[in-house]
Length: 155
Image 1 (cartoon, rainbow, N blue to C red):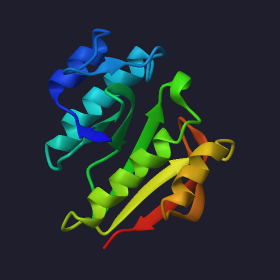
Image 2 (cartoon, rainbow, N blue to C red):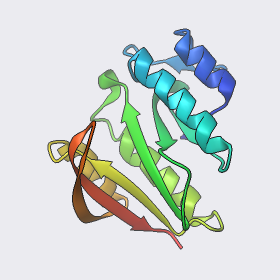
Image 3 (tube, helix red, strand yellow):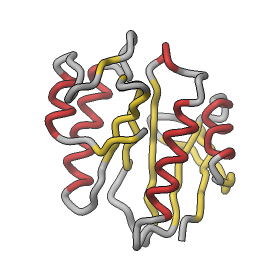
Image 4 (cartoon, rainbow, N blue to C red):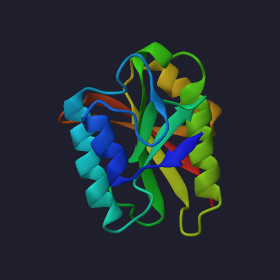
């Protein structure tokens, strides 16, 4: 299940606490620096678009997050996601991305979702492919290096 985030959710995560009435996985969903970057990103994106990010929740436990990576342009929403290491390889990312695809298909003005994966991240590539994303190219990112670009039409 995906749950739209709030500033309070990020504040809780940054202080090492579970947001709302949820529990946390036994391994962090991301290092503190990444959580802070995601919190800052959510503030920037939410200035012009909402939702900016979601908690990924399984059985009342926050197991990961999904974020809009930049303000959408031309009906295209770019997403990134991550799952706590101890909760990976359980189908959680696949279900969460499926929920994001359903959200996008029911949201006026969202024509497509995009995402990038590392060429070495085969599990993430499978998550996207199983949710209707098609590989549309490759690029090199300054920070992340080589990436495969994916797109899923939703309109």
